[in-house]
Image (tube, rainbow over all chains, first blue to last red; front, top):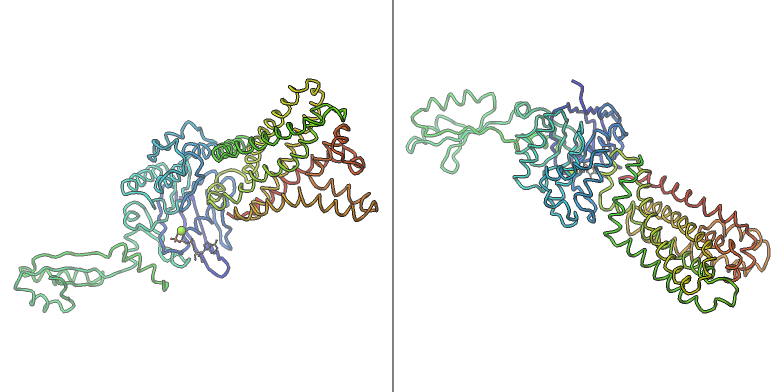
Length: 298
Length: 274
Ligand SMILES: Nc1ncnc2c1ncn2[C@@H]1O[C@H](COP(=O)(O)OP(=O)(O)OP(=O)(O)O)[C@@H](O)[C@H]1O
Ligand SMILES: [Mg+2]
């Protein structure tokens, strides 16, 4: 499948600071890709390079078959900057109408578009009077204008309330189903986990991991933890049978590698009758994320 | 292309209206023009010129300060403001060329200037004609003043955009704009005057001085409007210097300056990093 966005061996430095080093990635049509990374990892810089706002120092980038920032690329790419800002003297409707005119779209769609992001009631108020989340929605609305082939969204859900976040990801699902490629950055791991197809983790300007969540989970090979509740009197026996176990808060905790998972479970099931309850806790997304993000000494 | 320029122009007019710039520009022009027309009403007949031609002479002296000031006030924020608010990066990801953005702002700001100039001159002229119906013979001079004022304004809009692009910050752009206004409109003439006095009719006065007048858009504007009608020359007392320069020369300067200023602005804006 031909990718909407292809980046190979991209590097970018600001003076002495290496913001991006040797980053290669691709995003296919219909794919939702999340870009994760610590503050200052280079997410926003990567996005600005893709949009042609910042020139790369080295590497190759193809955006919808064109160079970043050229007229053809800009016609097909939508962008939501982090902390999207607009002129405070304009109303939401005027601002969206302006952007629609620049994209040569029928401006009668401006109000329906604002309605789609839940701003119809405030369409004729000045953006200066909007709340942070409302400004963010104006940003979302402008990113939906036309039918962009690639959406580059820098922390799109920051400032949105939980219900609006869910609505936002539903919008994204629709766009992806229509074939748009989506690259979004986020610090909210749980929503990204449920709502995107693939994860990219940047750390200190380098791409340290990419893949689906199960792939990353396997690659990270983080230990599984288990929590055992014993029947009152059998605790000592269980502790004796499982030398690696420790007692904590009235429960017995045990961690083991992914490859020892089944043997450990077999050991526990041998203690049948003494175990009241067993919980197997897989490594959380936070654990996986910090595993990759820290690998580079962050 | 045209659609995108007009889209930007429309948006800029919305902004200027909300920020009261339209109102401020119109009020400034109307109030000062009316004050002049009232003040200039006394000495008319003595000079043998019609009332309106005399008014045009004083409006010329006013506009040479006021039009550049209004133009700079409207334009100094144009690029630096977008940079500082953080609205420029998003705008530049749209399929619109940078020069189209600038052209849109220019169309909007020039339109506002035209409205303000017409309102100001129109009000003053109406007062003059009501008081003295023969003054209609001065309408040609008024028309000349009007379109040259618009060109002068466009020049300073271009200069304002260029400063705004170079400064990067709104406060810096404001400082540069005020400095440039003082320099070109006030200090430049004082400097020339001092040099002419010191030179006492020598080489400087005959060769450098006329060229220096033509090189300054504000001086060229004043010169053209004062020499174009001899009556107003008499009224304003600008003597030999103005007569040494043919009107076509100052006209050329007035026409070329907007192109230079806007060209420099376009180049400066292209170099702005969002
Ligand atoms: N214009 C610039 N000049 C100098 N350094 C810059 C510039 N822009 C970014 N940087 C540096 O590049 C690095 C990456 O910054 P970037 O904004 O891409 O981080 P980020 O991953 O988006 O972080 P956050 O999660 O906080 O938004 C940082 O070290 C930052 O200081
Ligand atoms: Mg960022």
